[in-house]
Image 1 (tube, one colour):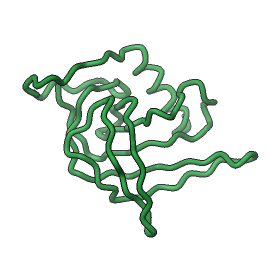
Image 2 (image 1 turned 135 degrees about the horizontal axis):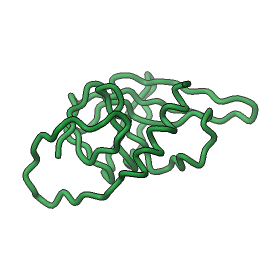
Image 3 (image 1 turned 180 degrees about the vertical axis):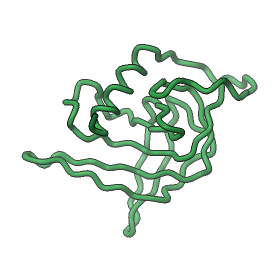
Length: 136
């Protein structure tokens, strides 16, 4: 299974189990480990992620990964935050549509991605947080 197909399969599984969770001041507790590919509501990070930025160039798709992108210590679906990446720094707002768990890392899917409507082999923009810890 290609990486893109795996992300698409994880996304489909997450859509089936996704539910919005309000974070209105409730205490956060560690929860049992969710299944691989499951959508989670809140994660903690070490403050750094890899930003995967993909582009569609008519006949081909290209992706570039930018490492050491600063991210908040706690991230939930629905959050928005600014990220800065690249050797000639670029800044953009990243709005989190979903947080998927995969092999001890979290894939943060941005709002502008219309997965799973894209073809299974089409690359997807995302922030990859490794390691991340799932919270309630």
